[in-house]
Image 1 (cartoon, rainbow, N blue to C red):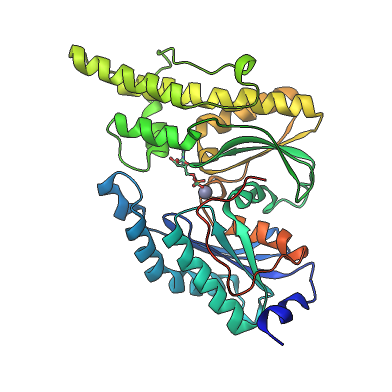
Image 2: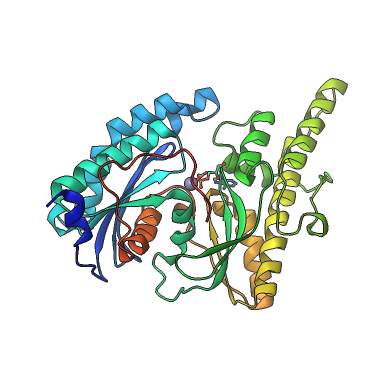
Length: 348
Ligand code: KG4
Ligand code: ZN
């Protein structure tokens, strides 16, 4: 019997122990998850400091960093989970979306490990992983609910109908919100990664600039961030040309408020219109304090059950890949050893 035929015969266990690997961008991450929701361990080795001098992620550097970090991360995750490799029921791995060379490191490692242990290999979409982070350490969360996806590559309002079926109510027509944070940070002369640095700078600023908001009356649940980004760039360049002093903290604060408001208004409207009682958040921008505060306030007012994963589960991690991997494992969605990496995957 081949490896794959054997995987398909696997007896599915409700309390399966899954080792998950994530290497789509600049974090090498590995986690062990039990029964889809219990985090036994979650390890990350980041290469972010290596990219700072270049102002963004350099794919070649990211791939090399994954190659040197992956065995260490996996060993730590297994050790800290208090298990041995023979306790594992499946290996989940991010196959996309992301940087191809980076993804291939995780995919190749996962294949070798799954083959050597003769257990199923579960391919996981990074985007779905961000949304499934909300199930972690949360026994009560069950679909249907509304999810906000806000990362470096995606911004969307999603109706999660069941564990597998997503209905995208609206998404960005141009830049993702995280991308806008990163670009604005660069214009303001802040270091990569931009999002957290904008948040820090905004703390000492005021919302004094009236940046364009892309109203729901025109965009519905869709988003547009390129107009906002351009408005910020124009403000910075105009000040430079006129030789005027720019209050960068005020620019950062005004940009952040505008960018976050667009998400909050759409998310709340979607929950109200759906009649569901729950809102979840996924993606790196979910770590933003301004977003967390505004959503918490609105949801309290309206009695909406807000599931806000801890910041470490909003930004890239492998526990979320384990949570989504578990759902795919339950369905028997296994990959063969020819699994390839994909730069893009469909939101649905
Ligand atoms: O989800 P993520 O870690 O990776 C992707 O799948 O894209 O998201 C990364 C994005 C980056 O654009 C980063 O600047 C942004 O999330 N981000 C933040 C914060 N932390 C990360 N944006 C605003 N405020 C933050 N605290
Ligand atoms: Zn991500």
